[in-house]
Image (cartoon, rainbow, N blue to C red; front, side, top):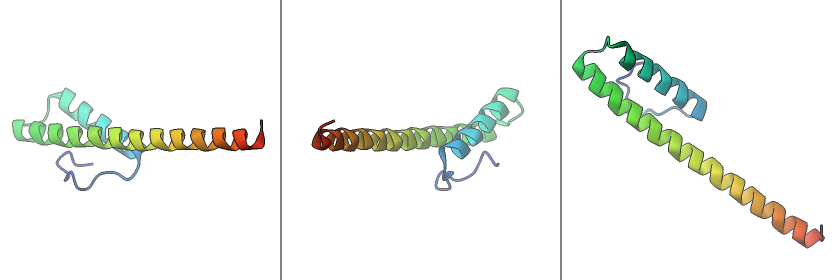
Length: 79
């Protein structure tokens, strides 16, 4: 995947975002990118990292919601 892809074109899953982020890190660590490519890769990587944080936050909230629902259900059932 192209390290210069638009921030608006973020992957639809956490796994895809992490895979792209790993590829960007590898390309940057290789030292083969020109300065402009490195800057674009950094910006894309920062956008992907923020996207991953948002996705994780959403999942954490879903887990908290489920746990609350479960606890309420158990309390209502007397268990």
